[in-house]
Length: 160
Image (cartoon, rainbow, N blue to C red):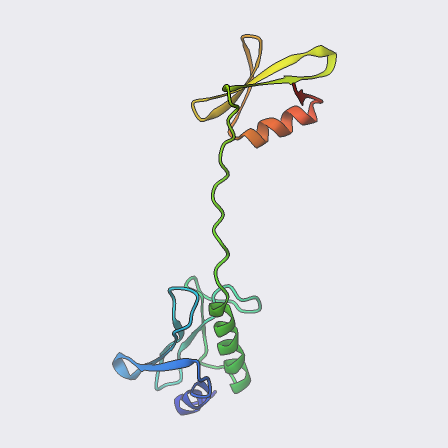
């Protein structure tokens, strides 16, 4: 197990990290160029050698629910690798959050679908659901247009 001083010596070799001494003799290292709000790479490194490195969801690590791994018993190589993984993870911008798919709405509120045996169905968007009608009879209801379209296509229907 590395001592506190040995861990500090290794961590000080990363010029992109800023050392921050915090309460109770503990030390944090921040990565100010983080693409996330999170900037802590090393958290609460204690004089007894205990501490944590933030690895987020980096493969090959088993972090706690906050994304940290305990480095108490890490070798010099393991500590360097974890810090490098942390910096790489924090340097990668989060994937753009995809907007929820918009519900497609036919211009006149109704879409006609023709199928086998000249059957005609109407797809209507009402009350945040897609309703499929045969004449006045309700056949099915769908939460999204995509579900309705997939069902109709599988059943051999095409837009008319």
